[in-house]
Length: 186
Image (cartoon, rainbow, N blue to C red; front, side, top):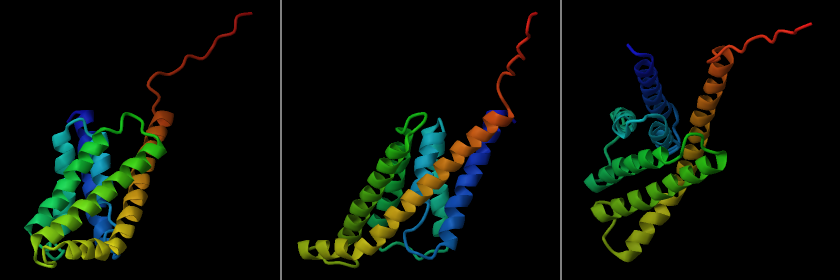
């Protein structure tokens, strides 16, 4: 197996493990790594299809033990927001700054809140399709939104910091070119 393929396989497995494992271990609703996994997958993988597959695989496996979504539009909106997060991650550039990571993570959190709560209301199973009920739906989502922001920021920082550390360690232990020892002439 080529070195590049092996690296991609390893990152795929690690991201899915983080996405599934952390979601299973953390009991706080919406303090989950799914958006961070999508952002990092979009950033890391050259293939957007592989990045999307990684994020959706992690979410799908972690959803197996969860109760189903409130309705089909809610489920579609969750998966759709994850797909957009992959796209946002692919736009981060080669070496994103902490400010850019923070802004992208917050944008993904806000998008998730707005889209999924609207979809929950539009499904009509939990809320009547009236404007006061839409506002009630968004108000009910605020506690979850706090956890979403916290989880997205925490896991995004953790994934990208771990990646930066791994790159630095790799460069320290395996320099691409050995620098020749300077020879002094007398």
